[in-house]
Image (tube, rainbow, N blue to C red; front, side, top):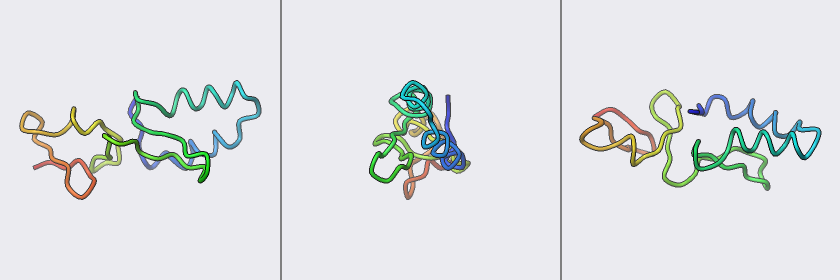
Length: 84
């Protein structure tokens, strides 16, 4: 699953609106973790991008190592994965 930073506010609403611990766990399993490159900050109640991940020019959260370099034609510039 690839998350887009434009969807963070809606995801945060879902997490905040979880009515049971099971529902909260399901949302956190779906929208956070090493597979999607995001974490949920309990203090700020916000989705944040994990270290090693960055948005591309379209806002998709991608793994930096897998999506930059000579073979990809993309680089990390100012915190955004950008075509060369």
